[in-house]
Amino acid sequence: MTGPLLDVRDLVVRHGRRTAVDRVSFTLAAGETLALNGPSGCGKTSTALAVLQLRRPDAGEVRFEGRELTALPERALRPLRPRMQPVFQDPYGSLSPRHRIRDALAEPLKVQGRWDADGPARVAALLDRVGLDPSCGDRRPHELSGGQCQRAGIARALASEPRLLVLDEPVSSLDPSVRAGVLNLLADLQDDLGLGYLFICHDRAVLRHVADRVLEMRDGRLTAEWRPR
Image (cartoon, rainbow, N blue to C red; front, side):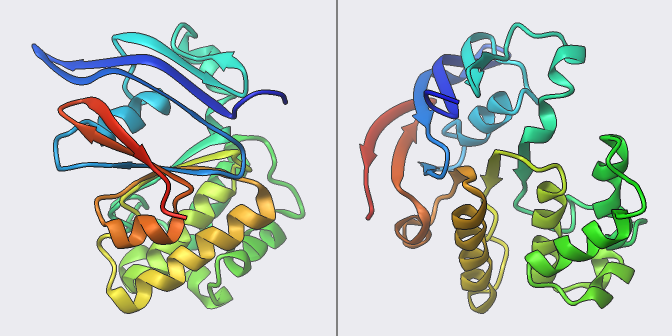
């Protein structure tokens, strides 16, 4: 693929009469971490949802791997969705409380027709890849710590073999002692897999640790760009 992994042009998202995202444009390369930073309500999450096409934008373009997504019907988007995966702030809310972790990781493989005799081995490899003991696969989310549960959520996202992860405050609910381990995991995964990260975060200390570029947002608009490293 030539060109950026993600190319967002003049994105507009409205909530009723309020413009939550006002002509936002940016690009993201494979292997790069681009962060969105700003106060609550500035449009960060609305931008992320529009990138994932979980909230269709009111105007603008979202190009992923060179393909414009906003005009595609859902049936055409469906095969592309596995390549763009979210990781949410609340690790417990992103996994079904009824399912064991092993089943949660198996589900994307089954939906995509990749579950076969090697399926259990793939699930075990995903647990290992995110630093979870195999016994965690037999537990339900409420039986895991916050850090373990967020690692399981990352493993579930990886099961789809994505190229882009959209991470919405992925460590803000974790204890400081756990946060660094999850951030280091994300860095290792990016190095190994060449993933692009759209990283939403309000903590500048975290941004300095993970981001290649930071875009500041205020009132739905991009106001500045800076490089922490």
